[in-house]
Image (cartoon, rainbow, N blue to C red; front, top):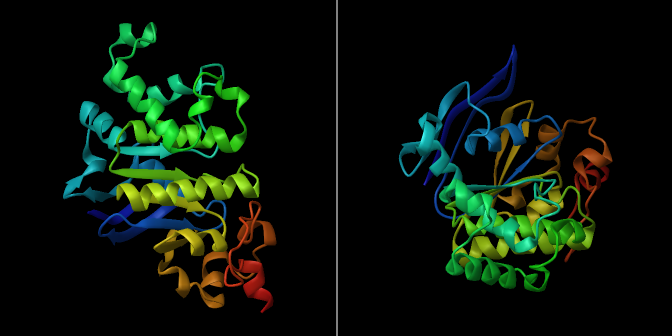
Length: 272
């Protein structure tokens, strides 16, 4: 379904992403981990066409999405929904309208200007909010919600697009542990129930272990690990984060409560 072939992004003489290659079959939950600056966000932005690649291909069902232009590129962005760390909602707009903005590129300028939406679209938005447990928040301004609720609104907006793939760029980095767990549980449920591929950039090993079917580790723009969560050994963690990684870089600024003692951070591994 997804083939990434030698994708590279140069900023001057520095490679933010350096010849990244991997393939994904089926609707997996794929986690990308690594230190800040490893290239995780740049890769997702290339995949969503927010940033151009310097070279390489990303094939989805055989079509190179990096080669799409104009309307075709915009259509791809609607099929490859993006969820951001800082939510990217319109703060003073009500929650339901924020969700409806997921299909903004399908609306005319006049309809958008006057905030006119078909009844079917409004009902769909409310159904999605209900599914995510925040239907009662629909009439409120987005800025009135907690961080966890705002991120679920952002997920609802992504689902409004009916995407093939959901990209989540550090979706829990700004959240407290309880809200982080709710958001990750939501993404996992969408992955399993809807059979949608989810690719999430994550900082923590324990989060990757709990939610991902497969994990890719990046360091200095290169893929240094590609395997299952149970293969994240001490040696692998050192390869990804470096021997000098600090607790905050590799462990957990947002520690989701662990279900078992098997959920261990990089710092735990280094001290074992």
